[in-house]
Image 1: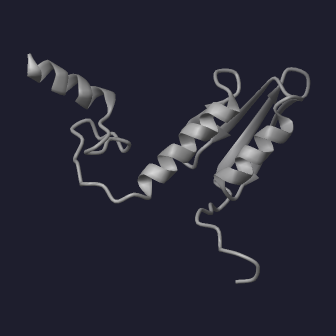
Image 2 (image 1 turned 45 degrees about the vertical axis):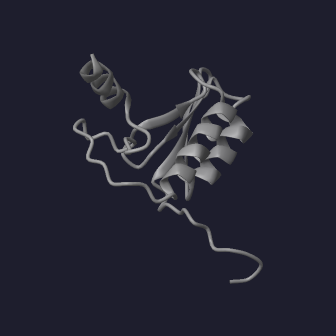
Length: 117
């Protein structure tokens, strides 16, 4: 290990940036990490109609047509930080992977509110 830490997150090129342009069509950039994908979006977002980040499950996790990159990056970093913290196990009845004992998903929060009354 020369000059720093090894990356904590790497992908096999399965995270992609999809650049959509009305004139030139679609370009896909394969990225080895979300950080690399974020850099690619920052580099190209002003020169294309829409820039999207697509995860390994073919889910669009960011689209420049609907959100600001800075806001998404902030949420992504918060979620990453939250996942690195040890939390109590919680089995979400809705199978939401982002539902934790200390930070429930919307459906679980609604269930709790309905059960209080």
